[in-house]
View 1 (cartoon, rainbow, N blue to C red):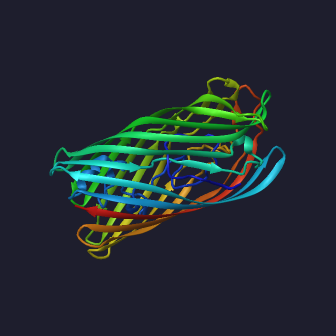
View 2 (spheres, rainbow, N blue to C red):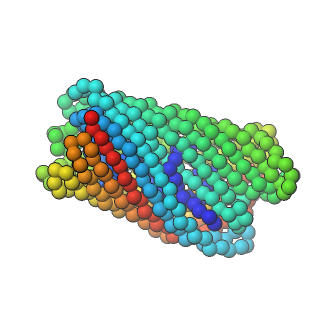
View 3 (cartoon, helix red, strand yellow):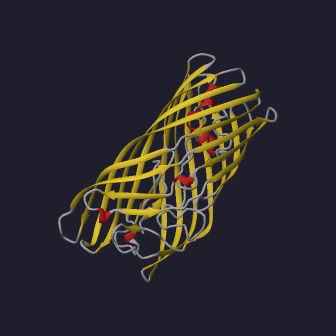
Length: 415
């Protein structure tokens, strides 16, 4: 196996994927803020110490006292040991991957009540690449789902204590999926899907300031229905590839985010986060071959709704330097190891993070964050991956041991 990991893009799906870790369960990514990374994203959207609120809770944009912009990226290193059994054969696999997750935000303070913002960031992502002759090639060889969210929003202070925000999101997705195909007509073929799509998402937020040192917020991101279109091709031995049109359909789930911030004194602030994701939307995933239905792919999923919880703290060491730390727990939507598939072998994860911000002058701030992720040992006992109109692909079983490291760097400029 060459590599497999969760990478810097997309909000769609994970057919034929083998990404065991990143920093959120399912196929989510949280890496919009390297400031927030240092406290496990506790207080996301209401901490008010960078310009990323647009992506978490748009109402929190009113906290910034100046206009400004920021650019950052997270570097994800992931290691997995996998022991797999497929078709009576066994194999031990290792994966070491480095990927990056970029983001860009800008805010303009129109007046004391209204702030507008723009952002480019990555809320979901999955990727895999196996050797073409690996033992589970029928379940996937190379899969890459990439996409970018382009967001524009506005926040208004409705009262001195209540802020409301709204964001409109245009999401661009590009998907490449390859596998071998055991089909009675074409024989053992090499199947490739290439698809692209635009979709839309709405994001609403509210924030209430109890006083200047305490506040909490709630945001809601809508469901995204995907119907990604493109082409598929199949190559059988030395025969010329046959070209078909294809369509992938699935849902990306709704999400509710609750976060809070409380400054205890001049030196310490506490933060918290609770995020609910409606993964029951992800009931099945299908890729339809429009000209040759027998080459279509259907994968059923029985995911459940889950919560992600985190707590964090900031320590204001000086006027220039802030230190922070956090811990989080992210529950997997996969209910048990019999429902877990080799396509998406997801599991619960613990998140431990530290970070710091340094204010170089009145306008420039540097942020750094680090997170260690631990996934308890877990296994796949069966795989329900099927091709429409063909015999079921043989079951695959596997045991996983996975850890990951996330390092984030960011620069803010106020103007």
